[in-house]
Each structure stands twice: as structure tokens, then as C-alpha cells.
Image (cartoon, rainbow, N blue to C red; front, side, top):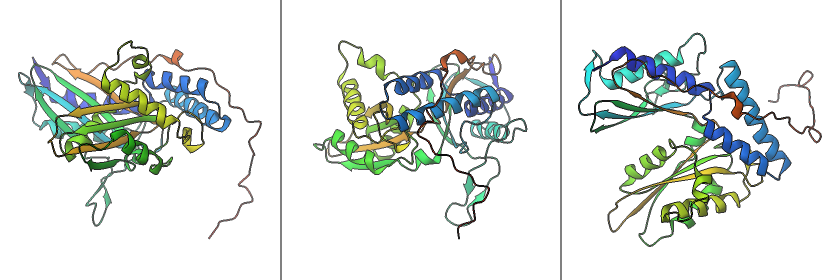
Length: 323
């Protein structure tokens, strides 16, 4: 069965609109758990505000964050796929991005600039996306569509360590240098091995996985990699950075690690954080039409009220411009 060009374009556009206002249930559940555990009131309020904002975005179908992100797409194309298309797959994806970001019912902020070294001119439709493709066995196309905010993207870290250097020590050294500009709490993605670009790609790919650290914690015999994830999550949360940098115990909701065989003389390591506006969606196309996106379960949202007893109100009516 042929996969049609229009189905790719519409599916990508629909997915980007969807993730602009719907958090995934695993993220909401992790945030609710973080809110329940948080001991610092200011950080607890920050988590509550993120959850309230997320619910309002879902109800109103409006962006959860003003930074609607740079689009990242991971595609696995089956070797037996037959296309009915005039455009390349890359052009189909970018047309989907264009339609999503210029949707009159929910226009999304265009943040992409071309000629980045010189004119830095806005492309007006958030294209082009950053696209990674892989050819695999099968007769379908799998997509992961993500919108990555710049606050977290700008905090990416990379190093080539010596083979006997301790990755945990390096990660714990890097996390405080990221400050709170990556908008925690969120997920930390780590890539280890391969080459420089492979480590960075694995770190980004790992952020596309569901939050499952609590399931890992319950396993009777976790793997070495899972033990490292648990260790890093505990140690990062003990740094006291906290939600929005306000202290507390909820800096990260999960730590993801992907690894790959490496040259014996090298240990490439990359970190990429994901912010509180975690936006990614997985779908497949097999020739049967446009992707069906997940139904939204609003019951995952708790009824929250923020403690405002210690807050201070201010008015801007009589304020003057500061020069």
C-alpha cells in the first residue's frame, strides 16, 4: 500500500499542533509526583503553576510556552515502503511544519532564522526542521516529532573524556553550570560513546522516550545502565537546583542514557536537557491514511491551588520605563 504525500504533511502538521498544547500523560504524572514530594514551598508553587498552565493550554488549545521550539523529527523508513509523492520526504516534513506554524486557528511563533552567521533572517514559518532519517526493515514509516525550546537547547554540553574518566563526576560538574535557564524540572538526556556527533544525537534521541524512572526504581535487578540512571537522578536532585532554580528536590524527573560502541582511546559524552515544555509525539504511517493521534485524558491533571500566602503583589500601572 502506498504512503501518500498529503498524509505525511497532514500528520506532521497535526502532530506539531497537538504537542504545542498537550503534554504527554507520563510527564504530567511525573510532575504531579514531584509536586507531592517537594518540600520547598516556592518550588512547589512553581511546579503547581506549570501544571495549571499545562491544563489551561490543553483546555484552550493554545501553546504551553511562548517558545514553540525548533522542530526535530526522527524518521525510520521501511525498505519496502512505496510512495505516492512528488516531494522528497524532507520536503514533505517541512511542508507539514509550515502548515502547523501558520495555522490560523493556533498560530505558533516562528523562531527559525536563516543565514545564521550574518543576516539571521526569520523564515516566517519555522522551517526548516532538523531531520534525522534511518532506513529499516518493514513497510511503514515511523515518526517522532518534537518541538525543542531554546532555553534547554542552549544548555547542551559535550566533552571527549579519557576512557578511564568518570562520567558521573563529569555530569554532576556540568549540571550546576546549566543554571535554571533550561526551565527545570525536566528530563536529562545523556549520550555516551560513538563519535562526537553520535553522542549528541543519542542524548537528543533519549529525550524522546517516556518517563519511566519510577518503574526502574522498582525493578529487582536493574541493569548497570539503569543503576547509573537512578544514581544520577538522586545526585542531581540532591544538588538543590530545584524547580525553576528555586531550590528543593525536583530538578529532574528522569535521566535517560543511550550508549554506543566507541574507539578504545575515546569516551565522547553529551548532555541535553529537556525543559518543562516537553513536547514530542510518536506515530506511524502505513498507507491507510493520516496518523490517528492519542486521545487526551484530562483526568491526569490534579485540582491544584497555589499557596499565595507569602507572595507579594505589585502593580505596573504607575511604573516608569527604566532606561
